[in-house]
Amino acid sequence: MPDASFAVTAAQPARIAEITKKVGDAVKGGENLVVFEFPSQRAQTVVNEAAVKTADLRVKQAQLAQGRIRILVSKGAASRSELDEADRELEAAQAELGVAKAAVTAAQAQAGNTIIRAPFNGTVVERFRNPGDSVGPADEQPILRLLDPKQVQVVVTLPVADVSRFVVGATARVVAETQKETALLHVATRPVPETGAKMVDVTLAFDSPTELPPGTQVAVEIDAEQRLNVPLVPAIAVLKDDPAQPVVVVAAGDVAQRRPVVIGLVDGENIEILSGLKPGELIITQGHSRLRDGTPISVSAP
Image 1 (spheres, rainbow, N blue to C red):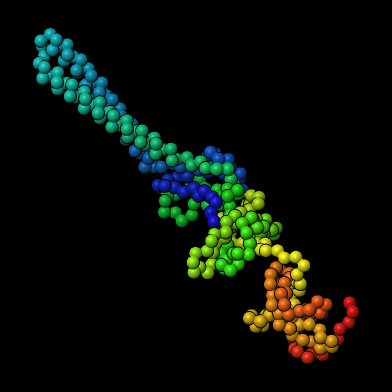
Image 2 (tube, one colour; image 1 turned 60 degrees about the vertical axis):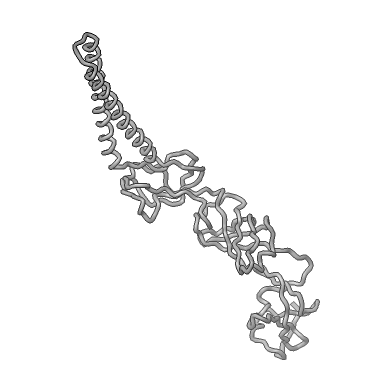
């Protein structure tokens, strides 16, 4: 099954401060999942805040100096060049403050990554970490994985010859080793095979939300074309010692007879016989693999 999930990972080295959910918990979109602490970010925040305070003090001092010189210039006690220098100092101080504040804003934006929220409604299906663990982008496993049951699909690879036997919307069933009950699906897409292709991927969607985690290996049965009033024999009756020529063993009077047949549709219990049998013939279904043409048999009424 392809992913229909969201994996929580750390974009940079961090410490997990909080994990709000455990495996099996339902989650609503927007809820907090994981809270990180970034040691490097805390240190940088201290540096940025100190830079803002230093730059702000420089601006205030430059403003006071500029004000004093303006008064002195008006009284003829200071030159115009001194006022120009004071103006340049104030501009430089204000520019420095702008850069320091921008660094704080950028750090605050980065701090938004400290909280990871659920992007959709779902269920936590895996959790590999706990609060206090150190994590990073190189970790092989995610911190936790959130599954959206409504988006889980199954992809099966089938021979091109079989794809034409069913249509989009055809019903299907899926069984996983981890579950006892069969889940119902339907064919969601049936792509047109590329020229020369021998296999094609078919996508099936669940009729109701599933708890199967992404990547689960499953067995799938797709309902292909249906035929009415056709001759069927139990699947165990057909012998395939030679895969190219299946046979059934019939009771021809008091001897056994191996009869080549042409088979059609097959399900888990029965096989359609297109040719090779006549109506009313008795088929042997037990011990028949050991019977050869002409082997004496005894037929009794049930």
